[in-house]
Length: 410
Ligand SMILES: *Cc1c(COP(=O)(O)O)cnc(C)c1O
Image (cartoon, rainbow, N blue to C red; front, side, top):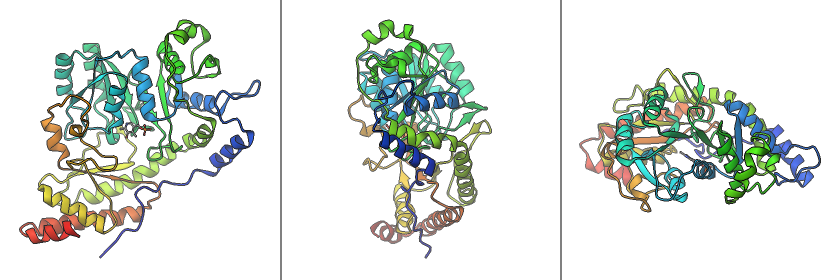
C-alpha cells in the first residue's frame, strides 16, 4: 500500500536574504515600526510602499493579521453598530468574525458549485437586507466573475471590500485581485502566500479610509512615518476622530516579508505546477468532480478542492479515513462539528441563524486539500494516486457496509 510521508502543514523555510535582514533588525534593537533614526524609513514603511506598488494601489497599511486588516477596513469604511454587511456563506471564521467585531451584522450569501459567491442570491440579499457593503471572500482562491459582480454592485450602490487571503498574487482578466473595490485585505499568516507567522495588509486608493485605518491601527501622532499613506492635511480631523485599536506590524515581520514579495510570482508558478498536476490526475477519477478554472482567472493553486457528488456521507467519511490512513489529509466542509480551521456557517452561533440550502448541499460534498510548496511534483503524483485509489475502493465497496465501517473505524 502506498503511503505519503510529507506534512501538509510544512511550509518552506524563510529565504536566506529575509533571515539576514531579520537578523539586522534584531541587531539594531529597533523592532517597533516608529523606532527609527533620523532620515530612516522603517522596514514596515518600506514594505507598505512595496506592497502598494505590487498591488497597484495608492495606499497600504501593514498590520498584525489579515483578520485585523478586515476589521480596520470595515471600521474605517464607516460601518456602524447593527448595520448589515454582506459576505460569503462559504468562507473561514475570521470573515464573519470581522464583521461582528466591528458591530456589523453578517448577511450570508449562497455559494455556487464553482465555489464563488452566487450573484443572483447576492442581488436578492442586497435588496432584502439594505446592506451597502460587501466583504467578498475569494475563498480558496476561486474568483467570481468580477465584471458582472462590479456591474451589479455599481447598479445597486454597494461598496466592495475584498478578502484576498487566498488570492494574493492572483488576477482576474489581467487585473490584480484586490484592486476591484474600495479596499482589499491580505494575510501573511504562515499558511497563506507569504509567511511572517502573523501579519496582514490593507490596500486602498481612498485617502480618508487609509488615514482612519492608520490612526486606528495605533500610529499615535506618528502617521507621517507612513510613506504609503496620504499627506498630513488628510489627518487633521481624522487623527482626533478615530479611536486607537492597536494592531501594528513590526519591523521584524516586515523584514521577513520584503524578500518574499519579490519571489511571490515565481512561487505562484510553482504552486500552479502542483495544482495542475493534481487536477489532471484527479479529473480522470470516476466519482470526482473538480471546479472549473475560468480563463480569466489567474489563480494561485495553494489548495485544491474536489467534489464527491455521488457519494453518501458515510462514503465521503470513508474516503477521508482511507486517505488519512495513507498520510493524505483532506478537509471536509460538510462536517457538522467544526474541526481545525474549518467550520460551517451554522457553527457561528453569535450571529443570526440563516438558511443557505444551496451552500449546505454543495459543501456537504466538498473536500479540500492544502498544497504546500514543500511538496515535490512526485509527492503530488503520489497524493493523487492515493486519493484516486481511495475513491475507487469506496466506489467498489459500495454495497458493503462492513467495508465502510472498517475504514471509518481504522
Ligand atoms: C486566513 C484567512 C483570513 C485572515 O487571516 P489571519 O491573518 O489569520 O487573521 C481571512 N480570510 C480567509 C478566507 C482566511 O483564510
